Image 1 (cartoon, protein in one colour):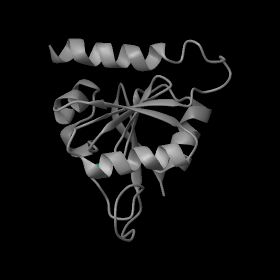
Image 2 (cartoon, protein in one colour; image 1 turned 90 degrees about the vertical axis):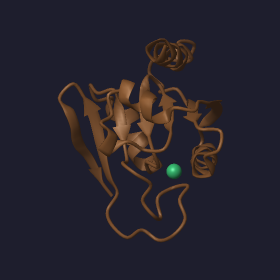
Image 3 (cartoon, helix red, strand yellow; image 1 turned 60 degrees about the vertical axis):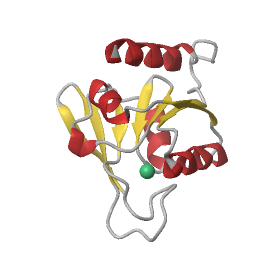
Image 4 (cartoon, protein in one colour; image 1 turned 30 degrees about the vertical axis):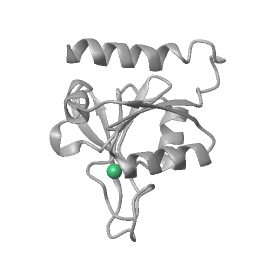
Length: 146
Ligand SMILES: [Cu+2]
C-alpha cells in the first residue's frame, strides 16, 4: 500500500517534468506534507517566493513515506518536496536545492534532518550550520554545510 503510494507520488513528480525542456530543470514542486503541518506550508511559500510552482499533496504518514524514499529516521525532515525527479526533505535552503538541480548528482534526493531553528520556513535564529545530506545507494552523505 505504502509502496504503491510512493511509486504513484514519485511517478507524478517525475512525470510532471516530461513536458519541460530537457536542459532546464523543472520548477514545479509537489509538496507532500501532513495536513496539519504549518512549517511545511511555510516552506512551500518560501519555494514559491524563490520561483518554484508548488502544488500541495496532503499525506498523513510522512515518516513512512520518507523511509520508502530511503531516508533513515534520524535524517528525515518534516515533509517531502518532489522536484525534477528528486526529493527535498525538510527545510533545505533554496541555494542547496538549486545546486542539486544544477549538479544533478546520482542520488534520490537531499535532506535537512529535523527542523533546525532559523532554516527556511522555521522561526528563530540559526544556531548551528545546516547540514544537508544526499541520500544515495550508499546511505546519507554530507552534501552541504551552510
Ligand atoms: Cu518543519
